[in-house]
Image 1 (tube, rainbow, N blue to C red):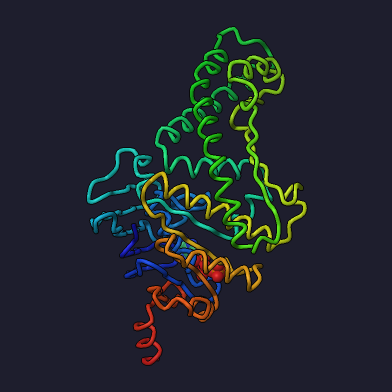
Image 2: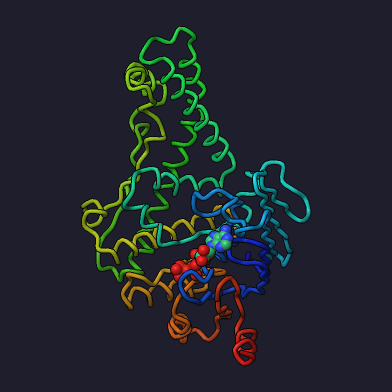
Length: 378
Ligand SMILES: Nc1ncnc2c1ncn2[C@@H]1O[C@H](COP(=O)(O)OP(=O)(O)OP(=O)(O)O)[C@@H](O)[C@H]1O
């Protein structure tokens, strides 16, 4: 599966932009702030119906405009084409259309066009709180299992309601029995989420270790462990044990929203011992493992978006990484870089790779032919 065309209208710093893409390797080159990441963000939108960060949709509309549009054509199996259009409007719900028909429920879109993105912010997966690591689990599982996404939405809603009720009670007993109702309603989604996360982590860890060994040249050992209160207790026992305490705390202290992924290097917590390059190698390996699992479960080759991956990595790791993603095991690839020659020189041993380079300046991306014409006219 790959994205063959991308058309942007009033999206971020792009007034109007059309790109014909390579099915294999696309490189966006330009100075800081030119709009390279914005192109990756647009592709992520087409695949996931939202931007990668937590930014509200309306910030993606070009300053001073009221609407934005992202239009993309995916070539899926047997050469069939799917056209996806994302329409953003100020103060209105976004609309996503597939082949001319708008989705009733946008969640139905997730997973059709699998994508993995690696950005500099991903270092927060290791350095920040457990919520970022649960998001990694949720992002992977939601793309492969619609039931997971539905259970997650239900669980989070019930959790919010339960917490709101606990606050209302201010430590007093609940005569309405509402807390018990929430406890019962949360049982099924909690058990489902836990079971799917547990099943995911085993194969995911194997793929992670494999990717890490390749990028690092086996210079250090890393590992991953899934911790959940539900590993040792079922939901009913856990919630019954906790309900009294929750009333005092006025929040829900037990459940899958407390799950944690523990990363280690040589048996020590990764974030305490790893160098910046090692952290970055680990994060890249997490994403490559996610890529492989997504591919297995969706039966489609995911799109891989690599934003600014060269910073902090030594030359050898960059070379190993590119060798890895250039192998036939990966599909369409997008890389941003501030150095116009780096990717070209790193892949010179792969003349078979179809490379499309775009030079990006202030919200305009030009392919090499257009760029040549543009500089000659200047
Ligand atoms: N809604 C918007 N309207 C207009 N411009 C925007 C909007 N949102 C972001 N921008 C602009 O987009 C530019 C940032 O683009 P982007 O993050 O893609 O840069 P980049 O080329 O990836 O840079 P770097 O190399 O520093 O990562 C900034 O100049 C920013 O002001």
